[in-house]
Image (cartoon, rainbow, N blue to C red; front, top):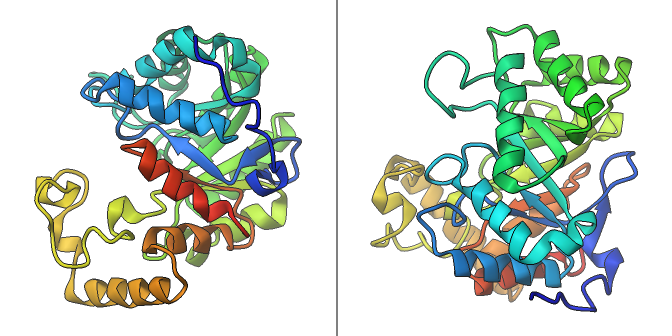
Length: 315
């Protein structure tokens, strides 16, 4: 049986931020299951990473219906972890999932319809062996489904007891503002917005989502904070064999332009002058942005997670 550290909440003021103007505190660093927790990954490694996270006060595990690969398998890993390790500590965990991207064939397995969102959440709960999720997101903006339909589905899963809070991810600012007002009017306030934010990709700042969240008491959580590894030392000397970019999966080699490489090398020099790795500097930069609640990090090893958690020191 897994016995978590008795000291996991020591220095809570260093670990947690308030999520907007809600009653929820989230760890400054949250654990994302996008990669490294799927059916193709070693379960015992995933298990060790989640143990280390919880032992150090990381209570928020972030998933989505199609995380894997294959689709659904990250949630199946979460279900296995719940049964083997975390069931006695369910009340201490904040577990999120999402629906919005491709999940199953046919017209009802994608985008933002009521049919898709509610059906997907039902499936997610079964895979994770949960009665409810703490947070359920609309994973992306759907230009063809009325926003009222998507938002009312979020309201209804809360009223049905299948989610405690709702979130929005990857919506443009105008749609975010509409969603905020709709949810408030239907007694299901928007808890948090999830957007891609890092030192390279600053669109939530430039397009106004982060400012809107800060001004309206909505939390903000950043995904891809290390730009899928670009903001580490991995690509400072080119494309290493076996890297995500070399495999040509979610990070195309065209991203690593000469201009970007020069910028990365400059940031690396600045990080070295501060006696820290580039990844830590990148995570600290996000947490220093006004309105940011948390950053979502992935981890392929306990050692990598331990390094990433250092960004909470002094921020």
